[in-house]
Length: 123
Image (tube, rainbow, N blue to C red):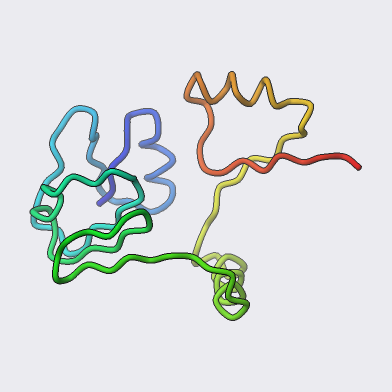
């Protein structure tokens, strides 16, 4: 199960979610095994939604919660690259030239940007 707005539902399903909850229209269901938190400002009430938690933003006050913090560790980065290369982890990234930065901002304002964006600078 994953959460997504209607705009992102197809992309999230394409990443493997078998069930999608439209968080803009319905409350998040409880009873989940694990909640992976990717957003800042997590309300304390989130602890009722799952039995365990992984957060990449802030710690969650729960006995079965861990906070994952990325660091520049060559071994971990090599493992991550191997997961991406094998297809086990998929990263969506759009590549745009610096000269198109204004267009990128307009697309973001219209909700047309998903995933990460790499801005290239021609030397």
